Image (cartoon, rainbow, N blue to C red; front, side, top):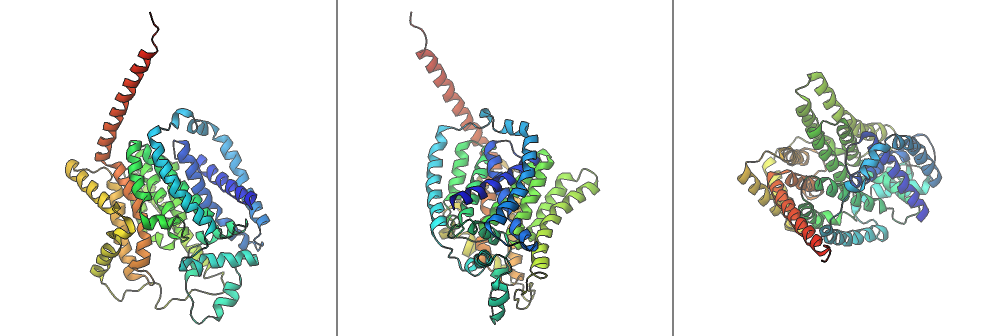
Length: 469
């Protein structure tokens, strides 16, 4: 079992590393490795689906063989990108400071608890039990995604849930890791959590002083609701990681113009839609950001890049919900009046409930929202700051679109859809604060203090080592 898990993780990382190395979007080894794991998990999830469509039985052997076939071309890419990799892994590019150690010890303690619960606790969220995990369990047992769940059990139920038809990423990950022999299959969630946390830390650390990054990520890690879903298996945490990484790389693209960053941002947004289908409603913000970046160029180029940023995520959503679910599965999801409901327009009540029940609920987020609000207000008052406007637009767009989703899509609600959807806001808040003038000034002050302390310690060391007369 252990060898199978190690083999699976290695192959997924290799697949992701080849894609990231080919696009060259990051500048540090930590960013590269964490992003390689994220991308590898996402891209490799299509393998069980391809085996199913090829009428090949889902077994450990067929899974590994397919992953090897997918990973082998990546070795050529990694070889050709060896100069880039040497720069990434140069010692000078990856310095660690001792004052970061307490933060990592604390986070490692929290991560150890989360990993233990992932490995040894069964799946307990209702949506997952009757949805992705149920489908995955039967797929592994019977060797095909089209199992007796869809051919025998659901057709005999007069009323059944729509959870078995959820966007496929979580279900496909469960299939892959249950095939290794793990009892509950959830260990991939631990890999996802660790990878994204390291990516966020490594990227923000290039923007502001490491001490400020540790403060930001402590609020991130100490949000009770978010932390709970590092071991409670659902679709939302994975969706958040892909979505937030995509938004950050798009931000980097707007600063540098590097196409590799845009390409990987589009891929990650596609994976976010692969994890939760309603993410497609946020893709127009990405498309608008691309147009805003490229607009001084000829309009045809701006339009082409923007359409590409929308086409691939839409393709993922349409393939699963129309081609596979509607055209391949023997049974369809049950909808009441239909997917969309425009019979009511109680926007005031919806947004008020979002604010009261979720956003400013201390039980879910501790003091994260107050921390963010105070620092944002302070930054805007002191500096009339337009830095970080990109992230504020994203936050406002998420808030507005979630209200429309809850109001007009059947099954969407504040208590579940928005509460777990609010995960996407949290890393974007951290990214915004790290981009502000306030944090830039604080970083400058800390760097000066650190340089001064190092200079004093160097002088003292030189005095101690002077030869005696």
